[in-house]
Image 1 (cartoon, rainbow, N blue to C red):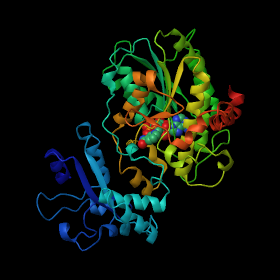
Image 2: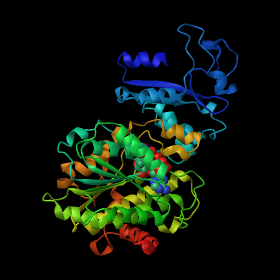
Image 3: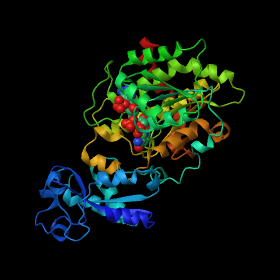
Image 4: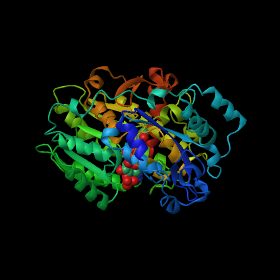
Length: 465
Ligand SMILES: NC(=O)c1ccc[n+]([C@@H]2O[C@H](COP(=O)([O-])OP(=O)(O)OC[C@H]3O[C@@H](n4cnc5c(N)ncnc54)[C@H](OP(=O)(O)O)[C@@H]3O)[C@@H](O)[C@H]2O)c1
């Protein structure tokens, strides 16, 4: 770690490191597969458990221990290091138990992409051949390598006193940081978490993070999107909080990245689609009267907004021209594909909501917040965690994308949901061209897929409306 710290302190913009797995699966940072050169030990990294590796010290001074990837990520996660890039060289020879050996086909694609930063190429090949997560032909690299954010919390110049926002999933990750920012700007912030304990902890963390704006307030609501009954209860609790409750912004931040064996929701739907789409749909529907009331009360147009957390899965997993293919939804597929499809579904809901509630003065924006270092990949295996964690950015960057979607004037004046969405870290970008027809119903010249997916969700929540 001293070497990495030294490089950063000397002004390095990027670090590159080799990865090896310990016997018990801890990702270690080591150039060599063996311990001989640095530690004068004849064993290999792969032969030793982390408990053993942690005790070793380099023979040469300053007698350092072998760091874990986690140690480096924690160091780079600090705000001062947020602009340092990290390239990870994953040794395929070291991962036979986790990943199949690359095929000749993938070896060829390795060569084809080798003009790309060489170390990253091996990651692409690896992911391509193993978990169908590598960028496909429709994929745009700008999601992975976005420019620095131009819109930050400093661009919300006005006090948010008197404004009300709802942030779902605020016990960790982007939701918690987002709630903190809104609170610091004097907003009344409703947060949702799955359990009472998580609500209390989130409340303490957000308040404890300091700098509450004058009049700022945080109010927790318990809600599990995997149980529509709790969704209704949470929405009712919010709606009962005032005579004509107003909501100036809804951040549909909650989301689950399911593993390969996802469970079912309380109402029996597969977890990814149940939480990310059906539960989110119901909550948004129930809160719409408060959003419409807030929009009526504003003199400036297009300031009341709903943000929907889609992701790069929209470009990666959405079937050509459709978004979500309801006919194949139940077919077996890896968890990561289910997650990607559900995130394409979130986008469909965002565009259909925009169409239906334009007349109410509510703006609906689908976003990819960026690849952000959060707990999202917690249900994934080691291989996917490694790949998903290879190029990630600090939480605040994803929060900037969300703030841009709700507070930027560009959204009020330029955003066209039928052609565009918002990408990291706060930019309006063109939709994948083949998806554009999905945004419009057939009677308006589209293929009606957003409408069809909306109605599919509506059918599932009817009983709870
Ligand atoms: N991180 C990224 O790179 C990335 C990229 C694209 C999109 N996104 C989206 O951004 C959003 C925020 O994610 P994050 O990255 O901040 O991850 P995170 O730290 O895992 O936060 C996800 C939040 O969603 C909550 N959640 C999960 N299942 C839920 C359920 N059944 N009911 C209610 N809440 C539930 C989690 O609560 P628990 O802690 O109780 O599980 C947590 O509060 C998600 O929608 C995610 O899909 C993230």
